[in-house]
Structure formats: structure tokens, C-alpha cells
Image (cartoon, rainbow, N blue to C red; front, top):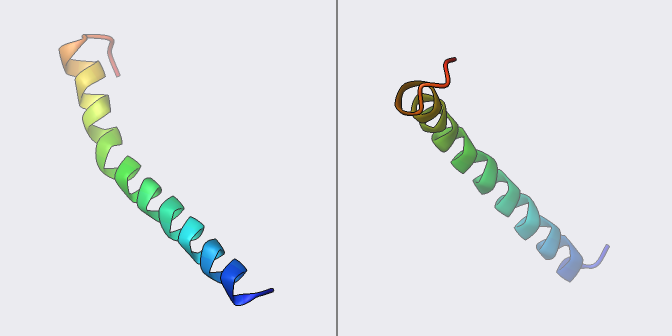
Length: 42
């Protein structure tokens, strides 16, 4: 594997990790919104 390919792979993995981290922060608020504001239940 070339170094350019390794750098690109690391960048993709970092992007995926940040995406998962962001989803972990927003999903609880989405649950509260659906359950309390829209009254769709748990």
C-alpha cells in the first residue's frame, strides 16, 4: 500500500469516526423530540 493510499484511508476512517460521534450526540435529542413534542410515544 502506498503512503498516499494509507493517508486517504486514515482520512476516511477519521470522517466515519466523527460522523458516528455526531450521531451519538443527536440521536437522544431526536428521541426526546419524537416522544415529547410530536407525542408519538416511546
